[in-house]
Image (cartoon, each protein chain N blue to C red):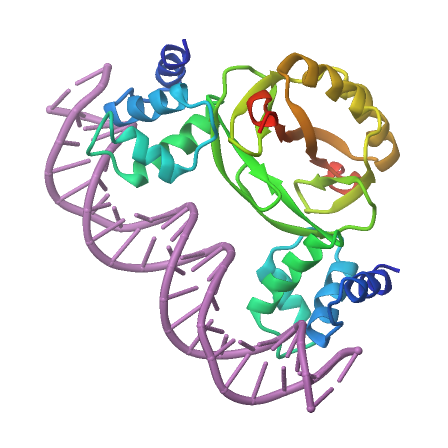
Length: 141
Length: 141
DNA sequence: GTCGTTGCAAAAAATTTGCAGAAAC
DNA sequence: GTTTCTGCAAATTTTTTGCAACGAC
């Protein structure tokens, strides 16, 4: 389960599992959509009312650092966070309802990257892929 | 040449080719690295001193809209712009010197996307790929 | 001359920092 | 008990808006 795993990751990295952090983690776990810090705050205050926005920012950044959340980016902004459960993975986002689906990294991508390295002389250390589209639900409307 | 092409794109879309816009376009053309709006302003003021930051923001957004610039994104921010000359393309960024190299879209990627659509039921309309690494120059240091 | 565009100032939005008190462990 | 963490207020940074003057066509 996402929250339990996340608690362990926090502890193993020497961080404390506090009530504010638990509330943020629970919100990420229950969300099907991607979330902005402000939205996380609103939802998490149902669980832990005295939560502050600053703590949300700090917790999301920490979780992203530890690999338990991912910051997602769009052509015109990059304020979204989603839960992340897989190691090397990417996200697929519905542009209508914001649903975010995680899928494993594309192994075959390495074969596409090789020729780019050869041609450009770059060493590619990291890649970011995001896909935007419509989820099954929103296609029907 | 990038600037000439860009002027045409602007005109064809019913926009005017003004001195402030020319300055921004020239900066994009001459830059090897990705640029933040503030940086564009500094460099463009060498060409057109009375340029304002607001115009830089508006011009970069317009150029991105028209496909002549691309906003690039990183794990921790998305404030960068680069010149864009190819139709469907992606960018490869050097994490040390910020050099940005454009490369054509990966046709083979479609074959990777298909199975994801099948598995998730999503219709994928757009994808964003960015690669981070070290350019030949920075590898030597 | 017309109408899109500009730059300024100001506003709004987004994010970060300092710090004393609270609470995990 | 110690040390990390929290929330507030305030500061900073980033981006947007309103508007009169300007300038491309």
